[in-house]
Length: 319
Image (cartoon, rainbow, N blue to C red; front, top):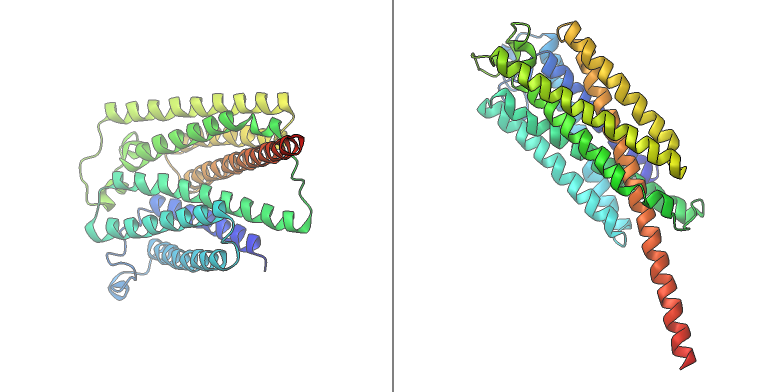
């Protein structure tokens, strides 16, 4: 197995773990097992679908921890020269550590549902870091094989700002959606409160607050649509990342439709889980584009330094 293969596998496992987390939220199963990290009281807990999902979620978290440690050790042994990879890997591992420890604290101290917003945002950051790490690793391998051109790409680099704007818009939309869901406001719209009750809360948000949070969520979705359209127009104008732009816009449209369907079916589990999965896919694709613009910038900087070195050598000879 090549290092970049392991990095991409780890990234996929992160995506799977995020989907499992979405199922657990939909099943109100976050606190179904009161102990952590193992479910030591499982013998006294009825074996239900909720418990099984929670146990699988914890098992995948363990697998993910092993994969990330494996990646980090491999990097330190074979890629110490690549500071970008090392820093990205270390930050990714720290993000995973935060995710695991914070999830444990939620279970042990029965944090309110709103606390899970931190989990949601951090999971997107972690996914983004590992997308970038995987891309860096694949480029490193391809360069050694002579597959990738090292020519500077000013057109790709010119998309850096709009790509970051799209990424920021996506994160804002994710955060707003997480607040809407984890405060219990989404369920409160339909007179439900099972999610907050599973976190030992018994006073659901008011209808006014629930509608305000829904409006904020919709507004951030509109911002994401605008960012997606802007990115697509820039991409087609510069003839870079056009396929990615089409994919991002298509996913944003699907995400918006799923949001509407989620409300129409009163947060039916399958629909809201797919809605969450698509949001992760959007952020993963956008993170890849941001990573590509970063690599384009690195190539331009390297070319600029090479040209400066050539000019200095010629100047020295002229003297």
